[in-house]
Length: 417
Image (cartoon, rainbow, N blue to C red; front, side, top):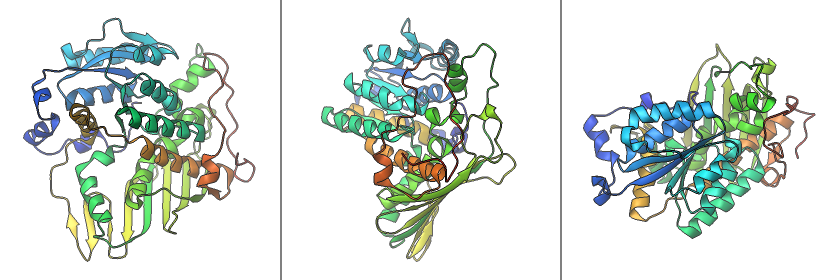
């Protein structure tokens, strides 16, 4: 929420203004703005604010109709930004809700679509509430931090399909035109059979909010949610999911097992919670293909955020280039995929042809969780073993007060549960 998500908006604001305008609005009567789409925003930090703006950019019929966050200052900051940028399309009135149950109040409004942009630990319960309330959904990635959350998201996605409700997720590479074209070519066999995948998210550290004397454990952890596994899933889940999702896309499958190493070598101060600062994971798919994954958040280290797919007849970076017997290079415009994911969602709502990405992103989230469990324990862990876990990471009761920080995981000592 406000930290770098790798593929930044600035990186993708390419192409002419005419090209961008051409993809902003769905065709038909809605393109003339005759029908409004009321949007409820759950999670008003940087990512939620950005998603609301992206939604409004994607369709001029979008009106921000309701807001929810656990913190009043998040509501206030988001309101000011959206009011300044969206003008009359920010029409929330008194539909501003604060607290752990604020999301339930948004679901009771007459919004058509909800944006779920709180930290990942809340995603599964918020999605379940949205589908129960018959709302279309845009939800940020990852969609859970543990196996029970993943299973809940899959159940909600299946129920959404029965109700003809939309679920689009913040895996924006899936809506990037260059990624889409490259992946189509890979899956059509332009590189032959895929025989290996590589995924990287290596970068420096992220921001940290110094604890204030007035903050309870809960408030401190929520305001530094990146650094607590129960809230973020650790950075292999919260951030590296993007790259793992691309590899699952290329394979049209998820891994069946993983072995990993990782640790907390540099960010050892308790101010950074208890997560690791580096992971290196070998995944294996059912057909024997290996995926080598690396992610790191350590200042002063070399940066690499990318994917690399190897086939029997060529290689690709999964988005702009294929090398080998049938070379190819992307030469088109690349409108902002953060906007395109909302455009695709709203266009499908308008057309009555639901998109449902819930199960797919749940599997990519579980892929990242599998790697985390393998690294935390130092054991080879199977998909079936990991997804069957009943361990819930969040506190049983969400309230401001004491929340003990678990010890840093120790491979060889921490157990697979």
